[in-house]
Length: 126
Image 1 (cartoon, one colour):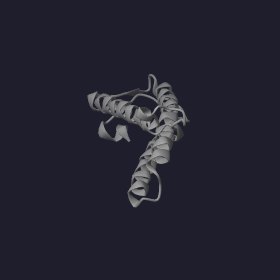
Image 2 (spheres, rainbow, N blue to C red):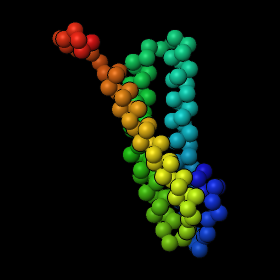
Image 3 (tube, rainbow, N blue to C red):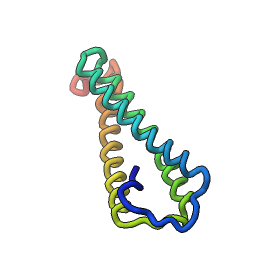
Image 4 (cartoon, one colour):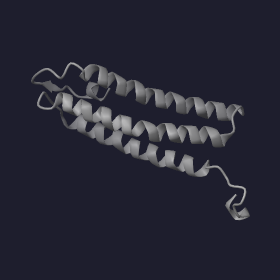
């Protein structure tokens, strides 16, 4: 999606698998957003306890990060020497990675606040 914001100068053809990899990246990121939205709606409806939903979302986001990095690296490799990008694409890429930083911090927080409590834990830790 980021490529739509800046006319990109193409000096050759990207690898044949570039399109499917880029589409997989878009679909995965869209899917994570939909799951997050559904979890918020489910919690507001009172059908799910907050702890398990927060834990599941945290694990989902943390698990998708390495996949995103791998897909991003594949996309870079598939366009090396073929595509030149402008400042808008570089800026949007930086914003995208900053958003990932926030998502990772929130996912980590979700895991911390939803961790299972042990019966032997002191009362102040519960």
